Each structure stands twice: as C-alpha cells, then as structure tokens.
Length: 357
Ligand code: SF4
Image (cartoon, rainbow, N blue to C red; front, side, top):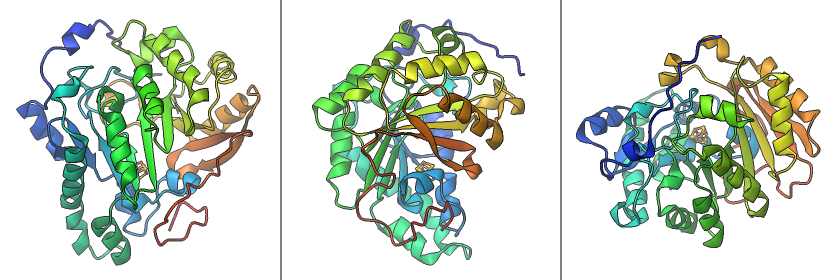
C-alpha cells in the first residue's frame, strides 16, 4: 500500500485570505483544462461526453438513471474553492484558496448559466469536424440546451452562496431534465437552505468515503475542526429531503475496504435514509497519483465483493446495478419511491439499459 503523507495543519484563516476570483496565474492553468466562466465558475466536456458523441460508451449515469450523456453540462460555481483535500481527489487542489464566499461578491446565477452555455459551445465546436462523431448527437450536444446538469466538476458547490438561485434558474428551462448536485456535506445549512427554498436538485449526492472520524481526518482532511460532525449533520438530514438522495463511497483498496470499515459504514447507513448507494473505485488519475498508488484502485470484482459484504450488513439496501466500465456497483433502498430513470423529455436515443448507445 502506498504511504500516505498527510498534512492537516492548514487553518481556515489561511483559506479565508484572498478574494473571490481565480488569480491570473491560476486562471491560465484552469483555462487549459476547463472553460472558465466569470470569476469563480467553470464548465468541462467530460470524457464520457466525448466518447459518447463518437458512438462510444456513455457514463454509468446513463445506464443507472437514463441521463443524456452527450447533452450533459458538467459545471462548478466554485471551481477553485473546497473545504477538503481528499487524498483520492484528482483535482489540482493546491489552487484552492478559500472556503467562504459572500453573497455580494459572487457572480449572478444568470450570468454563470449564460457563460457556461457560451463556453461549452466553444469547447464542443471542434468535435463537429471529427469524422468519428455521430452527427445527430453532435448537433444535439452543440445546439440544444443541456438536458443534464452535473454540478460536480471541481471545488465544492455549496460554498457558492447563491446555489439555490442557480438550481432554480436551471430548473426553469423546459429542456432541463435533470440536475445532479455532488457535495462533500461540509455545509449542512446550505443543503437545508435548498430544501427551504424548494431548490433541491433532481439528485443529491453526498460523498461519504470514510466511516469514522479518525479516517475522515486522515483521508478527507477537512479544514473544519468539526468536519466529521458537519458531515454527520448532513447525512442525518437526508431523510427530510424530498429529492433522490445518493451516498457516494469512493473505494480505496487497502484503506477503507476492511471488515471494520464495512461494519462502521453499515452502522451509519442503517441510521440514515437515502435512495441509492454508489460504490465506486478510486481512479488513479491526476493529482491523486502523488498521494496514492495504482494498488489502491479496486477492481470491479473487488468493488462487487465490498458491495456484497456491505449489503449483508444493511437493513434496506440491495445490489441493484453495476457498470464495469466505471468500476461501480449500485445499491438501492428497497423502500425508495423513485424509478431509476429520471422522468422528463428524453433525447432521441435508445434507453435500453445498456451503457452504450
Ligand atoms: S453525468 Fe458526469 S460522468 Fe456523466 S457525462 Fe455528465 S459529467 Fe460526465
């Protein structure tokens, strides 16, 4: 197993210096990876979108939930701002600078959406001339409003104080079919605000990859001293949220996959209510390669074995689906009220449960 070198001596004060904008040097670096929007947002063309418009595989969310991979906009309203420094994160977190944004200093959600649409087109336009691209899918991806919004790209979206307005604005558009929000659970009050403002996403993900406070401190490395308690507060409020709720466990072989971890995961999961649990292998990508090794990647069989051992300790969840391309296994709550596929206007493609078009 790779040695994990952990430094958790950063203080919130250090994060709270600076101002809300990418600094010029960061902006140039980020612009090589993402479409930069305004002062703190970004959009990306995910690798699955790229393969899918070339008639290749779609992402697992198509197989599990029926989302339109080629019409996905992967965005972040706080691309360079996060409270955590998870050892498995592939993102360039050394550019993260603050963990708070004031309402008055951030970009308007309307401007973010307009900028995202413009930047996304710029990132997509080059694919039009590629002979391998499926012309119909490219046209839909390029010309139509994105039907799926993945608020998950980089950074932590709950840091953006106008998140509720952003989600409501996205939802307002008739072509928006689904909005997925991925959060680290460090801002329970912002999640609760989404409920109060009737601005919950279609599907809310909370990352929960460490089953005890000690591992949380060592692996997730929140800047908050009460980071574990914040996460537990978020997990406990999920039962009161009227949207599709998902727990995401990133499985790191040799780190959070032993019997004791499974027991601890199960104890917590048996006391909260969600619709799905996604167990996904850690990906040996980007900056995470400095902190973990390829040995920490779990094979699909290993993920499945973990899911089976976890299922055996859970009261209400059964293994429900899997996608070998993404090394992921899905458990579903037997009492969930939700159909797997998101209802709404669908793109013109077969939805046959196969991750390929
Ligand atoms: S939902 Fe996520 S993985 Fe799927 S295409 Fe969009 S950004 Fe990529």
